[in-house]
Structures are given as C-alpha cells and as structure tokens.
Length: 183
Image (cartoon, rainbow, N blue to C red; front, side, top):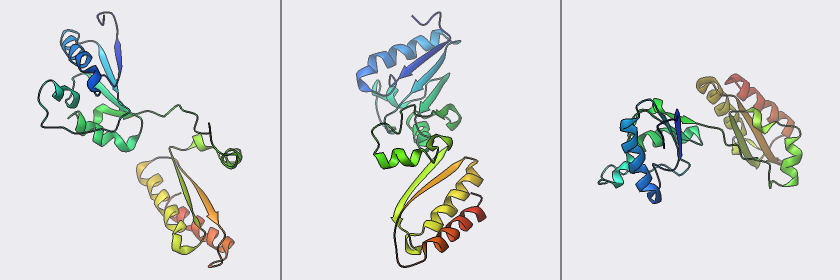
C-alpha cells in the first residue's frame, strides 16, 4: 500500500499499543521503501521505556527516515528521548484548535484588543497587582525568552486591584523591566 507514496503520515501508530501490529508492519515496510518519508505525529505525553522487550520496544525506539512531530516545543526533548532519536528529527506544529471556542465573554472581549494568535509564546499571568506577585519578573523573563529563544512573546496580565502600590506606577515598572530584558 505504500509503494507509490512519497510521505506516510502516521498518527500515534508508533506510540499506542492498540496499533502495535501497524507499528511493526510499517517498520518492516520501511526497510523495503527507502524513498518514502515517514512522519510520526504523537499527541500523547512522551514516555521513556528503555527496558521494554520486543515488540513493545518498537513503541520506544527510533525509526530511520522518520520525522517525529509533537504539538508543543516544550515536549520535543522528551519525544526525542522516547524514540531514542536525535533532537533534530523532532518538530512541533501549531495547534489548529480555535482557542477562543468555549471561552468566557471576558476572554472574547480581550481578544478583540489582543491578537492571541500573533505570538509564538503567550503568557497569561493573574494576580493582585503588587510587587510581591512579581509581575515585573514575569515581564523580565518574557524578555529573556524573546531575546534568547528568538520567539515572539506576548503577556496578558490579569490584575486585581491592590492598595500596596500605585497601579500606574507599578505598570511602568513592569513595562520597564520587560523592555530592559528585550520585550
């Protein structure tokens, strides 16, 4: 069935036990089809089982000529460990789910002013607007992430009124810290 295809896209075939027979079959077929590129998408949390015996070990071992895909960048190192492959063979893809679907009216209202889809990383931080909650540190961390990870970063601060510090003054401190760090 794979003789005339260029790319074989698999969804959890290499990961789920229910697909073990398909996992074994695609691995066997791959040895006879060196020109087919395999893409293995996994959306389950990666698990390392280095002591698993065959055939279960196939759920946790590299497959040549295969690109491994996961829904978030933060899981790529774990994915590489699960399949015992080089990190360079693991990629993330954006989730195409509408993040506003089912959100509250307040979130939808905010989305009219902030493009949630614009950023590679969107940080949402809620707390009482005072220095003890360290909003300024979150801004600084976001700036470092943007600078060193070369990602676009946005922050939504959900604040609650506080009498500890003047809100407008603290907002200027937060913005200043973020800008100093590259945000």
